[in-house]
Each structure stands twice: as structure tokens, then as C-alpha cells.
Image 1 (cartoon, helix red, strand yellow):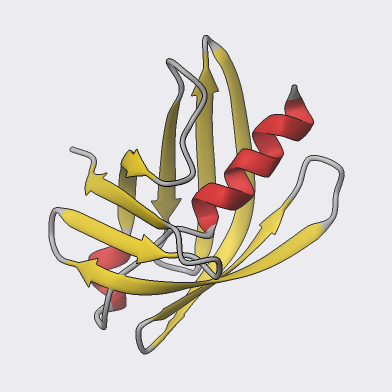
Image 2 (tube, rainbow, N blue to C red):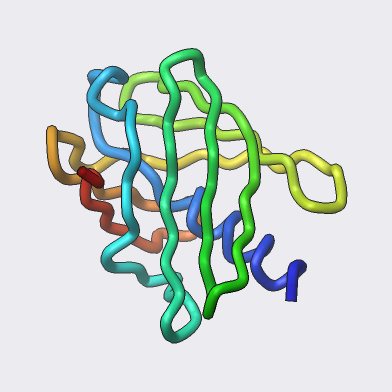
Length: 120
């Protein structure tokens, strides 16, 4: 189950951002729509911390998985490096289609879109 959740976290990361200002990205984002769907009843949150740290929080039926990583923006590209549960690192690049105070839309390297809402 952890491997499946870890694989999902990578997919979520591959679907993360949208244009220029990195400070708008900082904070917690909830996945609300995805072409890389979550298992039924699952939730996913990405937490972008000011110093370039990243936390991924996934809850599937009460089973929680938290992963750590780093992030940086380069123009409309978001580059993340995630630490997987088995100790490896996985680098991903995402194109930001929209990023404002409430919405984040990204496209992963395979062309799949994810939409996030800023958590309150």
C-alpha cells in the first residue's frame, strides 16, 4: 500500500503549478481535480514552504502518508525533488498554467492536468 501511495504522491507532484510569482505558491494546496485521480475517499495536500521545502500529505481511508522534498520555480516551471519511502529521490518538472491567490493548475510531463485550491 505504501508503494502505491508513494507512486501516487509522485503523480501529484507531477501536477503542480502556474506562472511567475513563487510567493503565491507558498502555503497549503488541496488537490480538487486530477487526470491522475486519487483512490476513492482519498485526499492530498501539498505544502510549499518558503525556504524551498515541500511536504506531501495523503490520506486514504485514515491511512496517512507524509513525504518530504524540495521545490523551486524557474519561470513557469516547477521543479520538485521528492524523497520516497524507500529513501530514493525523484525529480519532477511541472508546467504552471495558472497560479493566483486561490487556484493552482499544473500540467505534468505526460500532459496530464491537476487542479488545486489554496487551503484556508
